[in-house]
Image 1 (cartoon, rainbow, N blue to C red):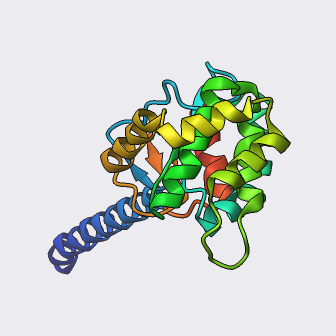
Image 2 (spheres, rainbow, N blue to C red):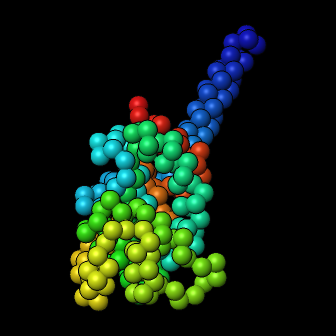
Length: 220
C-alpha cells in the first residue's frame, strides 16, 4: 500500500524534472541562436552595390560603413583580410559595401567620391576604398576634402581626375548615396561597422568566429 501511495509522487517528480530539462534546453538553444545575431526579415539588396567575389556565391556579406569611422578602419585592417582570404577569394561568399553618413558632410563627400570611382572605373573601386581608409588620421579631425579625394584617386585609380572633381562639385551620384541612406534606415543600422550575413545582423562585427560560423551555415 505504501508503494502505491508513493508512486504518483514519483511520477509527478519525474514529469516535473522532464519539463525543467526541456525548458532549460529551449533557453540554451535560444541563447545560442541569439548569439549568432539578429535574424532579419530580409537581406539588403546588393544590386548596383560594389561587390567583391563571385556574384553567385551562396553567402552575401554586407558591410554598412562610414569612411570617417575609426572602427570601420579597424575592421578593415583586422577582420576583412581573413574574411577575404578564407571566404571571398575561395568563392564561398561575396562582399558588398553600403555607405553610411553618420559623420555628416565629410561622410557624404567621401561616399560621393567612391560612387564616382565605382561608376567610372569599377576595377579601381576597392583600391580607392582602401585608400580612403588608409588616409584616415589617428586623431579625429576634419580631413575629407575634395583635394584629398583627388589625391587618393591619383594614387589608386585610372580615373580622369577632372571628371571626379566635377562629379564631386555637382554631386553627380547623390542619388546612389541617398539609396544607401534608405538601406541604412530600412535595416535600422545605428552603428558602424554593421555586418549582415545572409539576413543575420551580427551583434559584434569583430567576432570572426561568429562570422565564420554564419558563412559556413550558408554553405549547407
